[in-house]
Image (cartoon, rainbow, N blue to C red):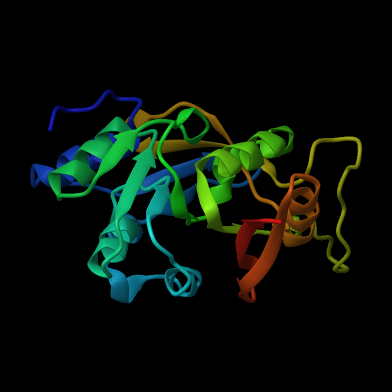
Length: 238
């Protein structure tokens, strides 16, 4: 594996792992919150360390699977072990190189630019719909799903309602209606001394997702929700 560009922080981590070098956690910076840690154990976790939302998603897989934002292939490996044909896509070349090193099929490409075959299940985990970035791209997101899904295919996506970030002491929620949708955020990832570029990320509440799905020819069904407003949704054409 060729050492990735310094902006490819996931690739830098993958390079260190493959070469038995000291490696560290990813630090995530945002425009709304204090820096957070994305533990390396989360990025390389085996099946027994899956989150409950992921366990539910794996029970709803069908046929040929596209793992969007596949990272280091943790989910793809598990999907493959269950007998499914799976392909991953990610925008980190280093992460994709890592997947290929461990025997997975993956491609470095943006979801909106991907021109693949048809898939029975499109899997988007770890707040996977976040790659849409902003609400204005949601119609484009549904168009891409329509392009990539087989006739009876479905997308399994997870997200969170982050209204709690705007909660007042009395429990009420303050959202400035003159600003963009409250789930739109900007992130930057850091690995050791390397910083990636800032990128848009979207958290969308299920009610809004369901409404947009209906407007764009899809239905949204909630399959799971935890106590932190993190949910799993199934999207299908009407």
